[in-house]
Length: 304
Image 1 (cartoon, helix red, strand yellow):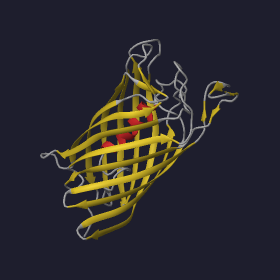
Image 2 (cartoon, helix red, strand yellow; image 1 turned 180 degrees about the vertical axis):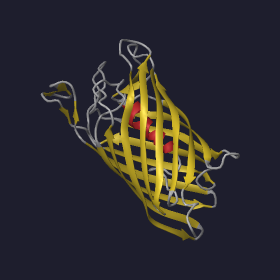
Image 3 (cartoon, helix red, strand yellow; image 1 turned 90 degrees about the horizontal axis):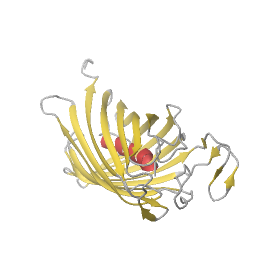
Image 4 (cartoon, one colour; image 1 turned 120 degrees about the horizontal axis):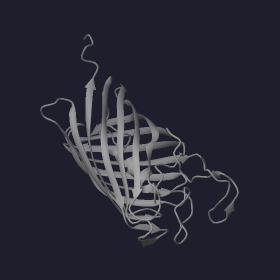
């Protein structure tokens, strides 16, 4: 259940920005885009395995996040992206103590592999490689309150984009490899007793579909749907807490919008909303976010 405030909420932070690891937009060479976003995720029902329920010992789960992100154009069609988030997780009932702090550092290298105009359709294929690692020594084995999983990851995304006039569609798929997580106990139970402080984390597969209207990279509105599932894991036991290596699945729908501030060149405002429609060992979460980004061009002082 914590996963909805960790993996999914954090990915939602990333997808709120333009020119990110999950779209086909690029920063031009020697251009930098950076900004901040605030988001809130909440749920009061969750899926215990596939059983949909509430829990009076939790009440409502609430997560607030502030994320910083920067995207730099190394070359035309080659970007490097960095991001991290501060997260505050709490519940409204029971005895669980809230957790807050800085989560993970995420780095992505994004490369346009192919681009061509086919009968008026601007088409492109993009590859994205990423890594992540915890920035602080937060507690992972305290779900659903933990602010993250503390697993170092390596990911690869393949993305296709087609645009006709201002209308476009984007589809992508991503595979994430996750390292073992060390927890502060020497034994734990999954479907059997395991005498170790090492938790083997199942890898994650996800895909994302976007349909929308855009005018360049600074003005767009899109509808999106995404699905993620871990490639393995086990279901929560009845009335038990979630665990790091649970089998976690979620399907969500939502929107993203970005609009430039007319009187401040380079500054843009953004907003997003997401709703989890189905899941497994996950909270049925609602996410709302808003942010601001600024784009700077470092080529203006160059000689022609």
